[in-house]
Each structure stands twice: as C-alpha cells, then as structure tokens.
Image (tube, rainbow, N blue to C red; front, side):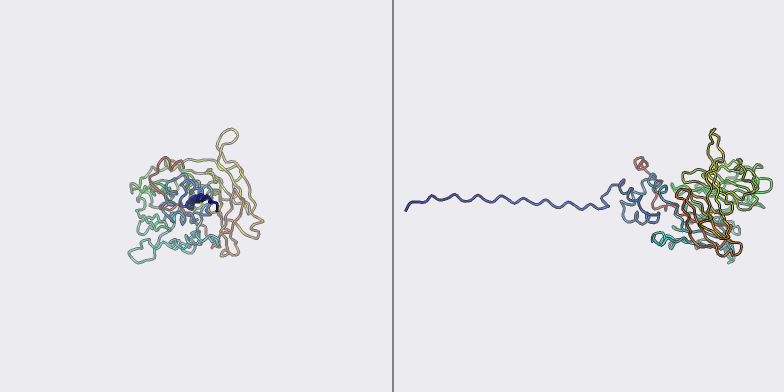
Length: 398
C-alpha cells in the first residue's frame, strides 16, 4: 500500500475580537452648565425652576452662578403671580386670594408653602389685635407697618425671612400721611425703604437701608403736593410717581437723589379717570387709564424731535371679554401685564381679578375677589437659595 503523506494540521481559529464596552449612558447630570441652563429655560414657571434646581448640586450651581441666566428666565416667563392681598373689612387683617393654575403643580405647592397670614409677625404686648397693615408688596417681599408698637417689617412669606426695624422718626411721621416703597436688590438680599410723608404744604422723604439700619431724613420739599385720592404713589424703575385725576402735573421722586420733580400728563386726558403708572416688558415707564371698558396706554419715550414725552401707544377694548355692567379698577402694571379687578355697583362682592398682556393681547381671569381699592399683587421673587452672592466674570457672561 502506498504510503500517504500526513496532512498539515488546520490553522488555529482567529482570536475572537473583544467586544467594546457599551458607551456610558448620557444623563442630564453629565451636561455642562450652559446646556443645563438652556434646558431650564424651557421650564414653565419659577416654582418649577426652584424644584429642578434643588434636585442636585450641579443643577443648583448652574442657576446660582449666572445672573445672566436669571435675567433671561425673567424675560421669557411672565411674572409669577401667586395671588393678591386685599384690604377689605379690616386693614389689620388683609385677605389673600390665590391664583390657581391647575396644570402647574409647582405653582400650587408654592402657594401652599407661603405664610400669607404673616404668622411670624410680633403682636402687641397688651394682647390686643395686631395692627399690622400692608404698605407695599414687591419682588416677593411684603412691607408692613404697626404704628402701635412703632415697628416696620419686611417679610418674605415663602422663606419666612423676617426683618423688623423702627418706623421713621417722629419729625417725619407726626400728623402727616405717610407711604412706603421698597427698593430690593437680588445681590446679598439688600433692600432700601423709602418713606414719603405728605402734608398740605409739601412732602418729606426719608430712606432706610438694610445695611446701616438707620433712617436718613431729607429736607422738606414744598414742590411736592399731596395726593388728592389717598391712594399714594407707585414705584417704577427706581422712581415714585403720583398721578392726579384732576389732570395736574405728575409728581416724581427720584429715589437715587431723593429729589422731587414734575412732568406733564398726557394731552387731552383731563377728567378721564386715574392714570396708573407701571412698566412695559422692556422696562419703559407707562401710564394706563381705564375709560369705561377700554384701556388707554401711554409710554414715556422720545418723540420725533428726541424730546421725552407721553406717546399714545395703544387703546384696548375689553368689551367682548368682559361684557355686562362692570367697571375696572387698575391695580398694577408689571412687566407688560395690566392687573385689574372688575366690580359692579350692584354687587361688589362678585368681582374678578384679571390680567391683560400687552405682548400677547391675552386676557386672563385669575381669581374671584372682593372689591378693594387697596390691593397688592404678590409676585414670587427668586429665592435666596437660587442666588449666589459672589459670581465669577465667566458666569456673569453665561
């Protein structure tokens, strides 16, 4: 038998390729601060931003480190109105009417967590009813005064931060009508309180600073006539404006210099009703007057000759949205939103608190209220937990 040559052994199988490990899943926590901020801008409201920011440290850092982001968030979202304080039956016991947004659970949670009854305010030693009255409500703070114990309070109902200090000196308050306005600063949670005491001959301003804890009294001004309606002035962009239904010149107090001045009212509007000062979305000073069921809006800006004056901006008929025999009481104009209440002389217990947006031209029914000439919208401010006192230049530009 012929010999057979042995066949070479088969080659070994190629080595198996090692499988690459699967890529790590990308989570929102892995995003950089800039991308996180872009995501946060899509949240529906400030309470939603608060809840999201407190989820973890990277989220909180992204919000706290960027004042520019907070400005953009404010620009893209309407003022976060939580409700309205009403001085109705007794000024010492202001009522609170909450706004309801059924689709926003974070908004509802903010209202539930707010101390809208001011339970931390001190009471009189004589066990009498507390005589705290609201003077202003701005940037999430409520300013109150108690003339019995000669104390003032700046209170944040959401954080329950309370600051107590003395009322202005007797020389400013004695036998005069006194009103108070607040200037708040997001940085360091500083604030100033401006008091204006009116009498027949003029007015006198004083300034309280949360830094110095003292009142600084300024000279009496005979150029400042007292308000003829008892409703006081309105703070807009660092100045207090007083308007008069009689058509007299508008009084202005510059809170930076504490100097009074006058500007002319809009032309041909004498006797049409009270003008309410406020601000547009882009920060321009405006006046709004309700002529029956029509809102007339004027803006303070340069005319064709470059001279600042009141320019008629628009007239808005609310007849179709309201109808019926109702009247309007303008409460405030904040960031381009007109807040007002409707009431009927026949039934003043059946009123609505409403808003109208200049930009979207949308009319909103916010909540039922009882008719009150002294009303204070409660708009949520950025809580201290979302504000960092020290910011790097890179964060400022973010």
